[in-house]
Length: 252
Length: 359
Image 1 (cartoon, one colour):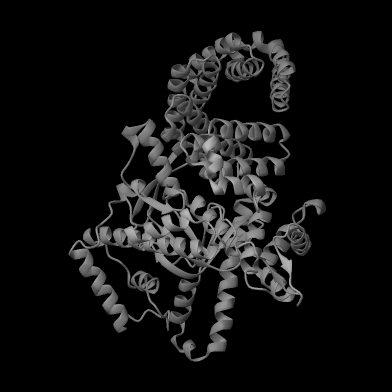
Image 2 (cartoon, rainbow over the protein chains, first blue to last red; image 1 turned 60 degrees about the vertical axis):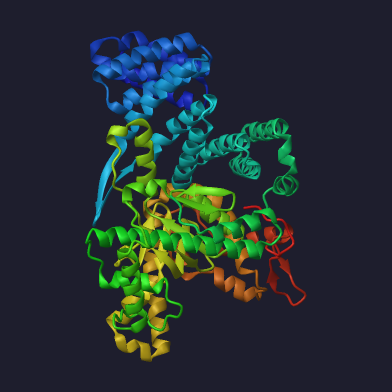
């Protein structure tokens, strides 16, 4: 197979993944995968493993996803950049989470985020000041996943703190898709820690944002989460502000 | 680490328990935040002075302006008795430890009380959103949020890399009527009530993430420094001040439009109209003539930058400010956010007392 054909298949797989057509993307990848084991195509091998791992994960083929991502991580640890290692760790953490192995997922996610932060910070000097800045785009999705893991692990305080950091970051870079997700998560946690009106506000803001972006399924999920949070915490309805928000929605 | 007095906290709790008085809640929140940010500023200043870090005369003057009851001149006159008294009292309070120094490494532990509880300094978005929901014109700009959040994440995940240094630069004060532009937020501080002593004395305007910040105090100081005689000609003063402000604003908005072009479109799609609606509601707490309202929001620097940007955009993606504003007004009238009085004025009753407030 020619290099141009391999590149075209990988490109097409990537574009299919963006359209959520994982089955078609996977069959494109499988067509070229054996050729990528040849040394001259080594630079594409890692990407193909990552793409295949993600496709299998999305299609619920967790064993196959695990094997691709494990192989990819080994490869990345040998020849890859820190960001590539962190990406494989993050995907593996997602797989472990879906398999119900919370502690493994947490361990992998913490390692991934640690690497991403370590390699995306830059030291800034400004007059008397010296401080760190970092590439928020690179960090926000992993941070969100870690917050969810803390939440599952019962560490609500840490989860809320991380989600608030992600929310602040998303607002700064206008990552609207992730912001909608984070607001939904913050709504759930706020209820769990007894901040009911704050929770309702987060849910309603998430719905408003998703409505603006046309994420109909996302709206349904958030409204279901609001309903189940109210069901789990019936005392919330005694809060005047909660009742006001539920009756009026967001005024602006 | 907290900077709020028992009395202010009590006032916040009182308003929290009776959420029917929006103007009262707004006033209490503004007062409590002013107290906290002033105490924070003093603690940062104390840290600098105790380390013998030189504070420039212009910075001292800007600092003084945030506390002066009445400002007759923005020209730094360090022999003015009220300035000398202020500086001496503050230095004395720092020397006697009445004002305690804040180590920059403790900045991440600082917590600010707003309605609903305490928030970290980097959560300035939450503080500002609460103020906006209550119809307040006060806003907080904190430049150290990146540094604080990255340090917190390093503490959690790579403690060996966490460092003690932080960025304690901030401004707290009253902004003008327009915070929403198509390119992001615009905080034009007409009155600064607390500033970090580390704020750049040369930065009459700057961009921070996608927020444009304009400091009128500093523009006035520069103007008066460049020509002290100008104080004798009020008309010339205002013309030159307006020109300088337009210059700084256009410059910063152009940065926002060009540096953040990828970001500004999602902002427009998701937040611009919401922020503008809040601005309009805030402006129409007093009934306004239609012309007054339209003139206030047809802000020249924004129009100039939009016209410039439109040259590079395809027809269907161009921004039509007037059309956008008129359709927003129609929507707001339809939803009862603003009403027309029998005299034909625009008025927003959403902040009227008696209604439940949520912030």
